[in-house]
Length: 169
Length: 434
Image 1 (cartoon, one colour):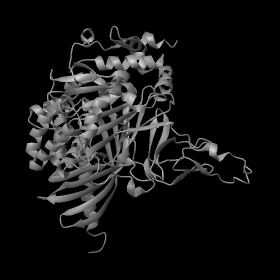
Image 2: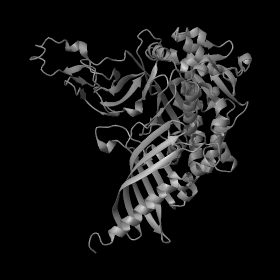
Image 3: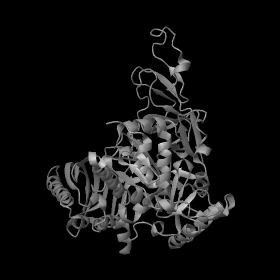
Image 4: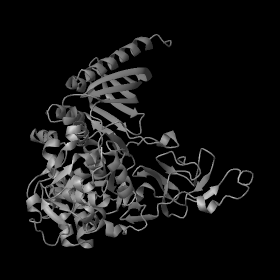
């Protein structure tokens, strides 16, 4: 196959998946969002600090992370939001997820690794506003004809975060 | 507005503290000078800088410092500011270096803080600069307690052991129980909370009262049969105590009837024989090294070392967390936090602890988010003119101080729900400011 022939439709399909996923988050449809993950999904966000070597800035697997969730714990987070007692999201923050620079870095049968940039705006209550910028590396798997997220690695650019995190990326 | 005397703002006879102490710029400046420039402040844990040349940067009050192990292995702490024009000589959060070269004019300092290089020393200074005199400004008092490195700018301050006082009796439990000693897991979390530093510090000093409702979502999940966290840490009631110490340190949720060990054992049985053995060995180690009372306490579980260093230690199977509340103005703090584990804990326990911290205590964790929200909205709701005229109420148990008598255990005991620790906090705070 020549470059561009197959990839063009595939990347459109993946982009549409990511946009829809972002919309579910922004609309607060967390249970539907959760359904976009495989049962063995991993959701991971390392810590970051300023180091001379870029390679040493991030915590590694097995070290302390900001998120180190499996699907069961992601579900717990969603469940918590539904208790009405999750004060940090009661009332819910308004978020806007901007997903850009979508790039398929590898594709094999029924599985793609896709990188994207995210800019997330959070507006909360009267005047609490935060931006989070970062990169995502996802592994998407096709299960029963649908794309699902099997791995998500989110690396934020900030070493000092503007506030505690009560939203998803 | 006139700056009122501190004594007018803290009325502990009635259990009232003016809201102005959380907002006044003048009071904040005075805190930096009289508390942060004079108290013993937590700098780092030794395991973060194990090798010669290793360093981390932090703050003492608003002053940036670098904590640096020199080539001989001795730890020093220095103001992170070039003596020539004040440029930050180290602009990273950690690493290893034999020397830092200032990016402004190139003055170079060795890892013992000495000035070892001055560009154009002969051509510019004609060899006349006194290089011995202009090393990095060293934090004059540096002391370590069980691997915790503290620094103090006040040369006349009492030594660290005296400063910690009888809190050491409890800290020893946290520091001695780990079979291989504590090790901070790599990965530092830092975030901003738009609130005064004291709101976070007093929370760990004595505010058990916030747990049932601030963290109500966790209990709601538990009722649904979901274990977001080990439920043991969140039993309430008269079997647990708050303990206040001289110099305003405080502990919350102290158990003296061995409950925390029993709870650990129950959890360990779910995790397997290796973990049961580990929990038993942890207790045995306490019994061998410390008193039977300390062995009964077994785990702390959370507290604050005045002014701004908090910790938790729920059990041998749950995280040791270290939290620094860096002041960044009267209505802003930076929370810096780390998770530590026993070097010799079984791998399964290390994993469980790391996940526990990331999922509960972390800035993304189920517990921490709601605290931030409360601290920030307290700040929002009390900054107005009318709001500032009012007091915060610290009256819980005011007429009953000293009633909880527990022989053989240091510190002043109070019931689980009490505000006596916060009252000591503000009494001490006021005594330092006047």
